[in-house]
Length: 230
Image (tube, rainbow, N blue to C red; front, side, top):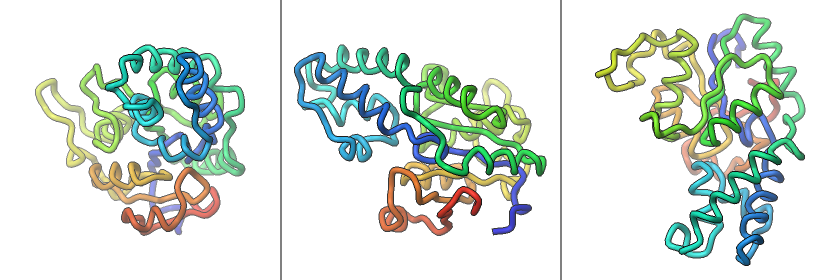
C-alpha cells in the first residue's frame, strides 16, 4: 500500500496498537474472584473484548447484567484495571516505529477506543507521544461507543479534519472534509463496522485479538501483517 494515500490515521487501541489482553484478563478475574464467581481463561477474555468494558463484564459474569452482583463486580473490575492497566501492557513490535514514521511524513494520528476514557488517555499518553487525540468511552456526553461513528467523528473534529458542528447538528460521517484522506485501522469486527459506519476505508491488522478467517467473514478486505504494512 502506498504510504502517501492517507494523511490521517484513526487507530483502534486494544489489539491494534497495544497488547492489553493479559491486564484485562487479570482485572476480570480479580473482580470475579472477589465475589466468588468462576474465572475465565485468557482466550475467553480475548473473545469477550471489543465492545467496551461493560459488555466485557456482562460476558464474563454468569447471567450477565441480570446477576444481582453485577454492578459490584463491574465496579471492582474498573477500579482494579485503572490501577493495573500498565502491569504487562506493551505496544506490539514495530508499532512505535510505524507511528513515528507516519508522524515524520506529516500525518495526523488519533486513537478511538471502547475502553474507558481515563484508561484510554493514560495509555496513549504513556506509550504514544506521536498521537495527538485519544477518545475513549464517554457515552454520558452523547458520544456513542463503536461501532457507531461518533468517536471517529469526534477525533476528526479535534484534529480539525472535520467541519465544526453546531449544538443542534447530529454528528455525521458526511461532515468529513475529505474522507478519502482518512483511514481507520483496527483488529476486530467492531472496527470493520465502525469504519463502514464512518464512511472510511479500513485496514485490518493480523496481530491482534481476531484472526484472518474471522475478519474475512466479517467483511475485511485490506490487511496488515506487520505494522510497517500500514
